[in-house]
Image 1 (cartoon, rainbow, N blue to C red):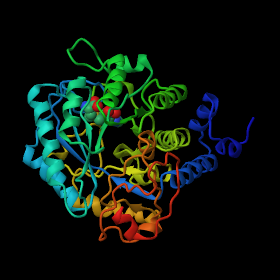
Image 2: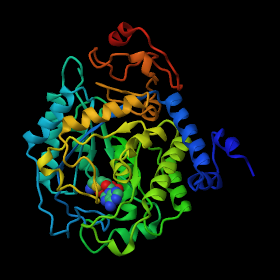
Image 3: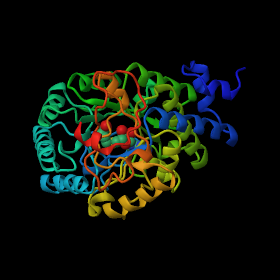
Length: 416
Ligand code: SAH
């Protein structure tokens, strides 16, 4: 059998390799896996950690996903909707605080008033987040579930020409039996396996940068299932991944099925993130908030295992506790400003920097679009916060190669 070090030096992995890595439990082995993923991340995508300020703008949902605390049949939950002004104000706050990117998430609706509301929000956010530091305005990730292609196209068009729109639609699990168990059918719009895959394709057709992912540690899920998830992400050629541990929700309908024990679940989730980095290489990977429900420093551990994206919660505090997808969701009582300060300190302590005022598109997307790829390291952007805009700046027009370009001359950056 290959030694672990040999295995970790590979660029291509068999299913058996992947399953072996996912199943590591010995602390020294896990640390080797972590190190390999971390090193590959800083080498391929740079030292920056990008923020997406997440605004959870409504907990109304027409679906009944059994794992989810905001599912339709959770009658105990008081439902809320932010107004357009509240939502846009949140995004403007993010841009004023140097976030280059926001994420809009909500329960799932497909009615015209919802679709039009989101369309208006996108237009307003794109117009009102422009500033000297962010001349092209904030980029936006939507996480609003399955929609018909025409809805995706409308939302994409509302943002204008720039490549600033992303969509996160988790496959949840690629095991069709588990998928079916999690998503009861019989209602008009419940998640169905085939339509979910079609939706991911439609998102690409509509011109979004596409992200998917799943839950880790679902009841009945095996390491082979997680390996199949990774193969699916590869086949779909996704730009971004959002994955996190499955955590029991009292508002859900799966109490009887339990969840993995906290310690092993955290390790499995971290292994999965690290293996995804090794296999998918240049995609953006988010350190899910759910990691922090398992360990106080869960998201930092995610960064240490190959993530390069964090989604600080900037939902107005009064409604946050009503967006509990799972139990023990962190930062419920903190103001957006608290989250921001505590996170930045944590990132700095890891020797990484926040990519302030940048969109932070994934290198994978940029390569796919034939855009140049710039890998910035922390030293290159010493005081980017007070400095001028550092959007995704092309320095090598026409290059499709993954380049590590050290940029020390800030003037050349801001001019190009
Ligand atoms: N309605 C949208 C997005 C909102 S839910 C959609 O379906 O795409 C966002 C994500 O939260 C889901 O995709 C799911 O993976 C995750 N989630 C929900 N309940 C969870 C739980 N109990 N544990 C961990 N993650 C959960």
